[in-house]
Length: 153
Image (cartoon, rainbow, N blue to C red):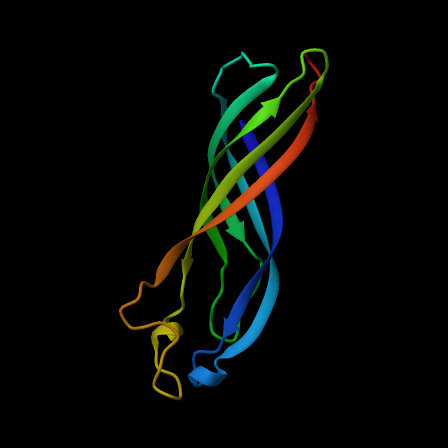
């Protein structure tokens, strides 16, 4: 069983869909993106290792949020359901209680665009074309390394 919480600095372009296309972009803003999940991690070799190395895969469910409000264009991330998956390796020396781990994981969540992104602005153009999807899945890849102390080994 695993539980993780991570924060990353994210940057996004802020747009005002009511403006003309040339003046629509208002710049970039930085908001921390918080990801939390619970799931399962499986050792592919069971209780065995090869020279202390144990390959792992993990999967889980979680949440993604930036705790931010609505921007001038009507966009708000809010709190989104997330799927997590990935793999890695754990190194467990045979003579100690320390263990080390490195993994690559992905947090995938759905982003929804506000209706204002599809409505024409002052110059009769919209941020997104009329037939475009109102949502898309984002994939946020994370590389993590860490260590642990095993009390009951």
